[in-house]
Image (cartoon, rainbow, N blue to C red):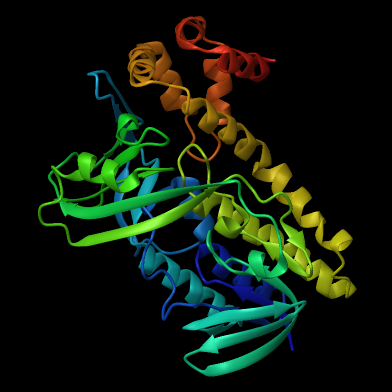
Length: 385
């Protein structure tokens, strides 16, 4: 019997497995693919904080980004450059493999190319490269991604929204230090162009519907010479309850991607470390009750729960913005004083810091009020207070 079974070996799963193993617990990590991180279903843009949380070398780094350019289809654009590294473009396969190797070095046992087919309490049935195997664990950490089966097996409610995404890696000469954001490319989210090394870029978008049509309309000028095409899913909004039945849910499996960017590595790895600390306490006390495991929800809520809640409100408000609204908003944000605030206080992982700063800027408030509907005005009032 293992102390902990981790299902999924992405960044969250490997971080959880490694932290539990380092604390002296016996750990098995079950991964459905032959190697962690492949196929890569991620834009591969990590904030500096997210990259630091992964605790890896710089070998997975393909490019460093210092700023962004936001482009409206109606002609306005906003460009800001901090002049220092704000994000890393990474090879996710290399990053995931390095995190898994670190967890294995700490003592975690990995079962690659293995799928969990059934679960009851701490008993898991698996099938894969090693045939059909049963495993007993005192508790489980579910890191099996947005479409993982553990939540369904346990009858747990899942994230309220799921975005679909498509991304292509293409030959493209572009400024290597700037990411391009195209809000009009996908009406429910946005499109992007991410430079991933000299002469290469990742072009993609996410949305709730009509994603394939939107992608080919947006990306068709870039697709000649495409060498990698991938689809993926991003859950938005945490599960109503992220613990129960001897199980903790982390990362995408819990619905932790940031609604403002879709990125899930930062919140995923941080949630994994919180889950590991609760797992250690539960194993030490031999108490795996829901009351004991509920400490996990308090930990992640205190850490980044408010940012996720704020991000969900931003995302819902974004659904009310027209192309004309976005164009006017970019014109306002291009004001030098406002752009300076973006550079100084912008944070991919904690956008609430910048949002509250902007809400105290009279010019910004006047512009937003001019385009805001009733729901947006109520939101701004809450944010300022």
